[in-house]
Length: 162
Image (cartoon, rainbow, N blue to C red; front, side):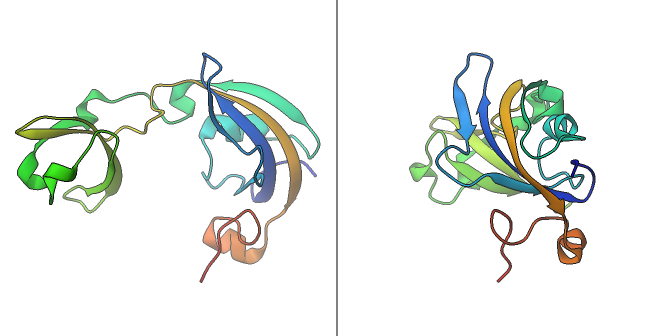
């Protein structure tokens, strides 16, 4: 069965940057499972997997724009310390959920602090970084009607509903 829209795909992977530093891997764990065509993985990798089948292996370099996007300088902001509860405990690397006036939520990462302010970055940590994936496709199957309705995989390797 070929990978196409509305197929459930399971694959093992190793993700590296251009200096061959391993950023993430399924080695020693379960394969990643996703619903193809639902935007559950980075667009460039989803495109590279289209038309492939179980048992195939591939190595693919995904440009930053087709991965987590290019960095947006405007997403780095200095915020007055009083905007945070317990601002004395905030350290570089901490992440917080932030909302905009329209109710959209995002994750921000603390990149620096000083006596008056805390600087946060709303870019994904891998924004602006080309990604290199080494992938082995483990399984391709039809999605269930429930998975299609919810837009993600259920069961082993996928999302569990309570």
